[in-house]
Image (cartoon, rainbow, N blue to C red):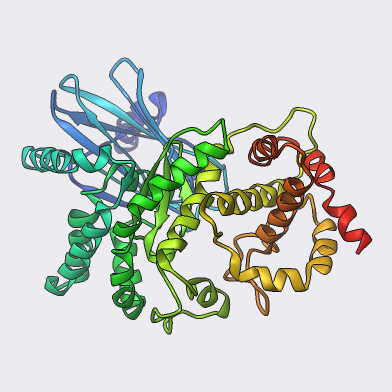
Length: 447
């Protein structure tokens, strides 16, 4: 009986005050922690004026992480746009010797916690590491001031060449982290923020091992970006001449894992150089699927292709106009009009466009494509028309770009004021009204 009474008193503090909060040790990794519907709390002791990196690896579940001080005041909150996979991370310099609280909160509650885990590490950043970072910052100062950043290409090939000196996969991953990721320009940092699962050192090592012939054959082409730099500046000038509302931006050429040809952030056009410089002369034998091979097998001048890509993405940087409050929300139509507008205006600016390869197929099947598209105008699923290289067969991928381009072309053709038409094509805020004004549907019905 005495033993049972002792056991009750032993666990009484937990029963009265809730579950005991685990304290995390610095530099220790806590792997495969199951996350369910509840927020998890951890204590961690931090030393004043020391800088720490908090890393929470999401493995099948999307979480938000935050840090609170001893007064329960939230001092950091982080949720990257990487969904249920990849790292949520931040750095913090402690203001006092104290016990802080790390909170991990799942976004979607679920009763099925299987395969939904996180790994946690709080890492002290050493003085030598801080010194190395400062050296990198100084190294990048000039490049980060440029309108067109290309230095990441050089860093990638340094990391690529150093793989032959690595004895293990861990060595390879660490090497790519230090030589490429840690030395990222401000543009590449934006790329990593937007595509965190694609730009990890592990993903690079895995992808290079999968496509060694491709990477070796694309190398020479990637350096042609250097030749294109003055032509990219020309794109800015041409765009500002035809579009009075033009807002300046920067361009970063980096090398990725064959996942993204181009995207934008608030300040950058971000170009995946391994995709944008790929041509029919590159070794594409390692890729499966006709569609992705066709998209990479560009026929023509690489430098012109780069101008076309930048011009297309350039349009997207200007399309920050919210939907009219009276407009019907029609997801597929709006997305295709935006992409088609980028193709059309990009062509006016650069003298070519990124989707010329689908023009022949589109023109030969225009009526059928439009009739099919009309029946799906407001689909929320874009898979039949956009971003579908891995799914489409026996026809070009991304035919939604073609539809949007033809509508923009007709809109411009029928406009009396061409300068105003350019503004309206870029700043579409009412998709149905824009479609009707273009006269595209009426034109095809008469044919």
